[in-house]
Length: 381
Image (tube, rainbow, N blue to C red; front, side, top):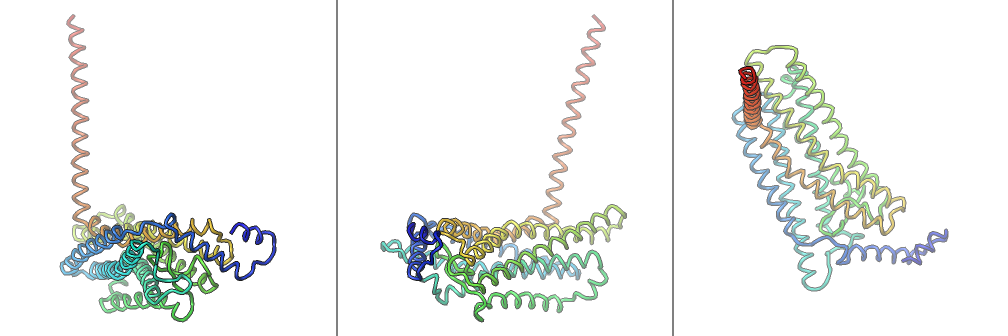
């Protein structure tokens, strides 16, 4: 391989047979036992179990809240939130089952003394194509839904009359259908030869081709996927910022009656949850989007050598694991950032602050009384 690299750096043309051999050597280097990630299905099973459990708990909470609150603005938000959690739950069940089967197949082959990932990255099988489509679909759906929820709350807070007139239950369900259809359309683009899915290191999951043999369509597909995801996060950030500023100004400017204060309290709760969703999505999805875009660009331009291939392959694994945790952490946003929980945390914090204040005042009083007694004793002497 060193001889091929030296021959290539001298400016001569590398024969196609040598390039194929170099590609195989790189693949073998990643597939060696020393370079592969652990192939135990324990972590995949744990992530899948936690994701299903947390999403089911959050879905039950949201369904009960939807049946309890019949206020239109709250009902619209809860319908979006329930759809997001249900989508995350379906993503954990479908994608998690496929990844778990890949781990099991890899483990069984390694126990037989052979390394077999049951597929060639250059010629992925239909199961890999399906898993790659699921990764794109269940990746875009939560980001699109988070963006739609932020836009809906921004409209409800800044223009409540227009929100009440436009956003009916039927239109909300239609918007959900459009979001799911758009994500499905993007996921099915490789069927029309606009991009391709392939096995990714350590050969237990599939995604857009970003490492080996990246074509112009693959690079364009990765740019499209990253652009849609990052644009959704950017729009959600703008809408949440506008909603937060509007709520703060409303609280500082007026003294509302109890009923109007209750409505503002619901708005605050929903905006806090949206900010939690946005922050979680940014932290969990940004590494995969950035690493995938860089890897595809380097692979397409031919700048991805053996060392960079190994490095970016491991970075992609880290990115997809963080993206998986987004579906696990999303339910906790609804579980922990509810108004009842926030109110309880506020009361506990207030009690502790008041207790510390009383203790500090008591210590100051004891200090002052002690100094006064010392002064009186000195005067008597």
